[in-house]
Length: 353
Ligand code: XLF
Image 1 (cartoon, helix red, strand yellow):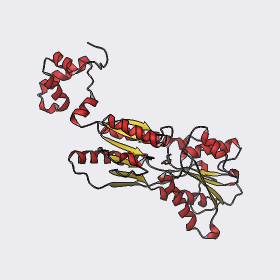
Image 2 (cartoon, helix red, strand yellow):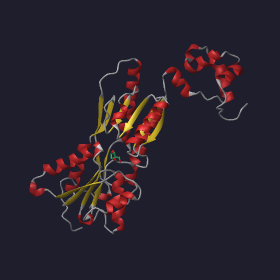
Image 3 (cartoon, helix red, strand yellow):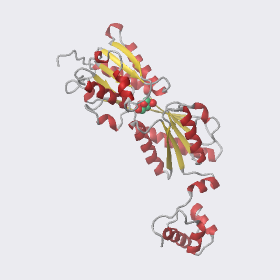
Image 4 (cartoon, helix red, strand yellow):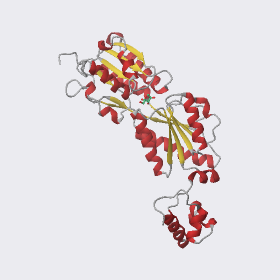
């Protein structure tokens, strides 16, 4: 009996070992319900004894039914996308699917090549997060589900209420008494962070002019990149003069904490910092980060729900209208914006602690 799984064990060997025809082995793989229990046991035992691994790719090509979902993210070095990919993988597994993960680094050409690779592996659907190359999805005949930037030919969009999240972040800084606020916004090509920025501005405009804190915006050139981000943050003009900062995501906020720590600026005493995402990483910083949570679990549930729905509709040739799923955000207050033990909404701290 061979040890472990064998890639060179084929259907013919299984048929020989079980003393059945190749057609019976094929039926066992594709339509086991058509075989008697006795026959299923025989073939199953032979496969086990030989360590047979079914060739899923060949199966997908022949049947047109793939059990692999392509997932395209900007980078798994960002804990938010690592968590999202993990959560999508867990939900896909419950449906009997596996994922094939691609990192684009927000590069349009890498995204194009990644999507070609996924199609060459005959994936059942593609979930694309923060696309930077809309046009490549136009003639694709598998369901495309977008998270954040929508692409023209997608079947479903899963979005977070980023605008509301930006509004919440601004108001939280005002509520805890910040008088000079900086928003470090994301690059202009990230739709989600443009929405966060709009929510932040809505909060600012909703205040009477005399109540408004002094407010500035700095736009980052890109998402987090080790070493590079610290340097860019360190170059923000008059950084030390702000008492409240809303960073467009947790990893940039964490990078900012490190820059401030190096300069000897105390958070939250001298500056309060809030991020966005609610990734596990936000709990690991010193001090732990206040953040606006995006609820990864809900996002991945919607993504997999959309995959199942459109996969079936495409099979039955009746694709319905594009769906939009919206996930609400939630403020999580931790030590990076806490002054005193229990900040109360509406209470203004004017210093003295
Ligand atoms: O694209 C946005 C910006 O960064 C995404 O949701 C994230 O917040 C992840 O960190």
